[in-house]
Structures are given as structure tokens and as C-alpha cells.
Image 1 (cartoon, helix red, strand yellow):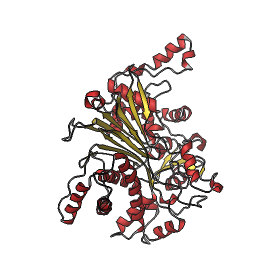
Image 2 (cartoon, rainbow, N blue to C red; image 1 turned 180 degrees about the vertical axis):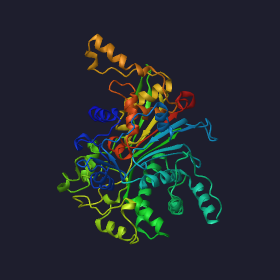
Image 3 (tube, rainbow, N blue to C red; image 1 turned 30 degrees about the vertical axis):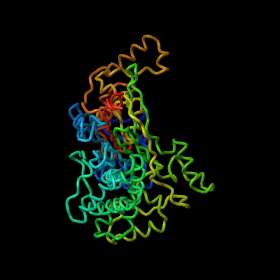
Image 4 (cartoon, helix red, strand yellow; image 1 turned 135 degrees about the horizontal axis):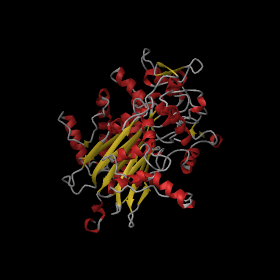
Length: 528
């Protein structure tokens, strides 16, 4: 958020009065879906209204432009909001099969949307080795991110299982015996599953492992790299299929269509003794925290954002379509002028033919309200040669080194506010317990001595102990609360956490962060 926009909000908040003098004061952040989305249609047109009449609509509640809004949260209230979705998990050093590559992990989420469109997953593979961590950023609603967060780790774990283990699963299913657990999940108490679709999800997972059993090449199971690549593509194909075929009940059918028409980016890491494999589709990000010999921290990105800022990705997209579409495939930094991430699950509006989309939506019961499912009749401009979008992940393998200390997985809401180096420095300082002042920029080095002294005084808050034991919370606190001089600004943080739900999404995104602490002993010579 720019300083000008923040100052504008702070000025309005300081008097406890919300004043809307002109729409130009609002500088909404870019969302993954542009103006035609249901959020914009239902919220912007109806909620930010009535300026001439001196009223303002918030979720159907009309407020006077002079009505007070409390932006002054105290420290206890701020901490309660920031920590409500915290997760702290310690991992046993030995899991019965060897030394674990993960010591512990800490995770947190802060929603801007209502409900939150981000999801996260974490689990230990029980029939193979390693742990899986995922961050999923939904758009067009939360439905696709929810389904992918429940299912993708199962697909990857099954792909890594040996043919013998898969045959045991199939034998249990045929004889109606309990299945041996595939994953040990680490769930937050607020997490939930699509219970009405559980049987459908298991049926399609079973078809997946049956095909692997029949494959002569499967043998001891796929490598993590192969498993991640195949699981992304297979799950997306299943999501597309489920929306097209008849299902046992209307609720399951409407859910399947809702999942397919919504979308989700995904970043999944498999952490094992052979290193880290990261599969990324979209604009979530994985960054490795490295402790250098001089005691400083450096960031090693393990993903590249799939958006218009990635020129290689832009050329890949353009190469898949005729030269006549070169100037229309990506316009205004969005796919077909609409979608910001250039790879994603779901989003069949950018994958199916127009005729198939109409046919599937028409298959819903006549009484179903499409708006209630976050569905709408819309064809992107210049939709000439679909598909324009796919989910094929970009996969990176990194062999663990002694200096590799932690891995940060985050949705783009985190990286909109923090750079890679800043995020790693924050977690590194949190890990070491030493909270240094922010580094001096080149322009600041030209300051006179008195000016520099004043600057360092303003930054002195950096030397104070961390307020949070959870590193993910520490990241989110600094992402939203860092002031102009690198210090934590209580007023800025209180403001960003106090914004009404209809305004919050305009100034920040949902934020999800997971920090995975690595067992660096694995990389030392005596463990080779």
C-alpha cells in the first residue's frame, strides 16, 4: 500500500470519522479478477454508493458519512486478530524410517476477503517419505482453493507410493476394509472439508491409483519431481471432468461446477532427505532462507511468479496461440485482460470452449441461483483459440545444504507487501532472536550525520524483541505494519486490521504464510 493511500486513510481515521468526499481517494489494489467479477458487480456498484445523498452502504447497512468508525485497536486486540489462525507444529526428529528433514513449521493466515479465499495444507507422507506443504490462493471465490487444498497432497502422495502399497489400498477397498492412512494431516481447528463431496473425491483418487497399478512402469513409485508434476495435471483434469458428468445429487453437482469455474494458484513443497522439490503454478511463492558465513541472511527463490512480470512466461503463453493474437492474449497485465495469474487450477472459463461452458451451466437445476454459487455468464474478450490457461507446474529441486535453515511459502498477499530478502531477514532475526535495524539504503548513505542519527532513532523499534513466537505471524505483522522508516507502526497496523470487510479487500489481499524449519544436520558430511 502506498504511503499516499495510507496517509489518506489515516487522516480519515484519526478523527474516528469516515468521510467519503470523492471516489478518487480510493486506490484499490489489483485483484486477480477484473471488473466483471461478482465481487465487483455486487459490492462496488451497491456498497460504495450514495455520496451525493450523504450516505454510504456497507454490506447492506447504510452509514452516515459522519458516523464514527473505531480504527483504534489496542495491542491486545491486534494480537488476537493476528494470532487467531496460528499453527505451530513440532516434528519428531525420527519418524520410524529415518531422520526427518523438517524440525518444525509455523503457519498463519489473515483474511481480507469474507470468507478467506486462501487455503493451506501440511502433511507427512506415511506410505512414502518426506513431508508436503501447500499454499493455495483462490480467485473467483474460495471453492477451487478449498478442493485443491484437500486433494492435491493425496494425489502427490499416492503417486510416490510403490505398486505394492497401492495394491494393498485396492485390496482394502475391494474387501471393504479400512484403508491404511496415506497422510498424517496437520489441521488447524478452523479448517474444514467438503464433506458432501468426500465420496466423489475418494472415487477419483481410487481411479488414479488403479491406473498406476496397471502401469508397467510404476514399480517403486514416482520420484517427488514426477509425482508433483503428474498430480497437478491429474487433479486439474479430474476437477474439469467432475463438472461435466452426472453426479449422485444436486449439491455435489453444484459444488463440482463451482470448483471448476472458480480458480486457484498453488505452491507445493515436498521436503525430504534428498532435498526440497517445489511445484508452482501461479503467483504464490517459495523462498529459502540461507545463513551466510558472515552471519547475514540471504534469500534463494525456489519459484518464479507466473504473471505478466515474467517475460519467459509471457512468451510461453503467446507461443501457444496464433500470431494474430499476440497483442490480445495478455492485455493490461492480465490474461485476456481479465486474470492476473497465468497458470491455475480450475478457471474452466479460460480452458473450455464457449459451447461447453454454456452446456454445463445449463445442466444445473433451473432453480439454482448462479450468483449464489459465484457463477456468472461471461466470455472473456478475444476468446478465439482456447485453452488459454493450464496448470502445468514449474518444478525446482534444491539439495539441502548446511546453511539452508528455513523455507517460506506464501500467497501473493504476503509478497505484495514484502520482498524476498526482507521476508528472509525477518524470519532469520526471529529465529536468532536478534532484531537488527533495517539496512541503510544507498540514498540514505548520502545523508548528513544529523539526518542519519534522526533516521536511526526512528528505526530504533527494530531492536526490540519480537512480539510473536510464531514466525508466520511475525511476517504478517511486519507486512502490514511496517512504517516509512522500517519501524513497526502501531497506528498503521491497527488501521489495516480495522478496515470494514468491504474495504479491506481494496487495500490488501488475503495473506497466508508457512515457515518450515529445516534439519540442517542432514546436509552435514557425516549424514551423507
